[in-house]
Length: 212
Image (cartoon, rainbow, N blue to C red):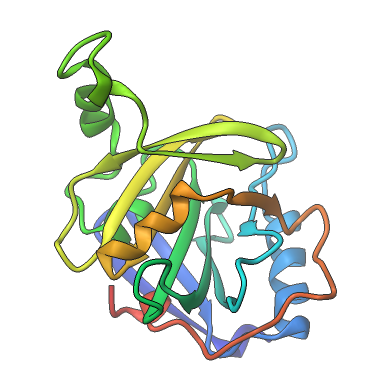
């Protein structure tokens, strides 16, 4: 199984392990690796996946960042399906990571390891009470309403960031208009707690394989 991974290094991001293919057996192996590679003294590293998947969508990839010394410090789940506006192809990534890892920022095309500065700006400008202060996406994560805030990203994608379980949560969509999916009723489920046998798998996501 380990031979199916390849590692990418970029700035502060620890080695990123991405299976070349995706399916029920590979998913089970990654879930086991993530569950066993998390610091038992801290919160478990989740694998956030929309469940149920939006109509016509499939799960297209899973990855984890870390090494044998530091353990699993970030995870990513990819899915793809019809875009909400024009029905064309769309891709979504959901990244959970510890502070300072930098995987979400790298995939979103942001400088620095964390979206903290941009989040602070979004929360303070244009000021309390202004209608633009509200978050641009509200999803449910592990049963809890969770706001996501837009962050600056290249024009080919839209990126949002928030917090869940004391970790950064990133949602990144290609093309940028696919971010409208997050305005709908999206519920994220942690696959390390339970992996639905009804999950449908699709062709491997290009965005987890270095094409972000």
